[in-house]
Figure (tube, one colour):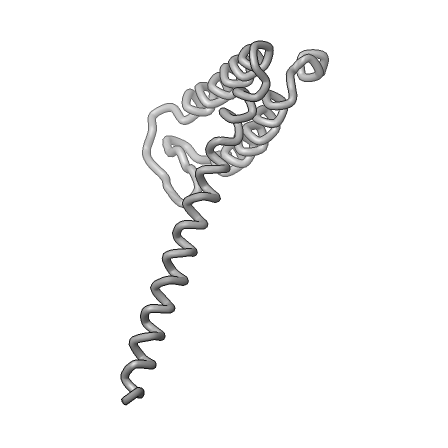
Length: 116
């Protein structure tokens, strides 16, 4: 817990989100032998425990790196952490906007059939 308290806020945020994701992946793969499952995807793998170990090391590495970057510039560290979320919501907004535009065009086409 002492190490966690020494982390800066962006590194803590990443560590918590990544750890929750890791636990969910771990629970999904309990009892699976020779298979690695992630969400609805699954593949055969000779050593899924190795994949889980690599994922844990990946989380620790990025937490350390974010904390290191945070010491130099906290803003950059927040941008790196939040970038995937920002990108997701931006893409979601674009998809929703295009869907609304498409519905308007389809409704306009239906209305123009009835006007003289």
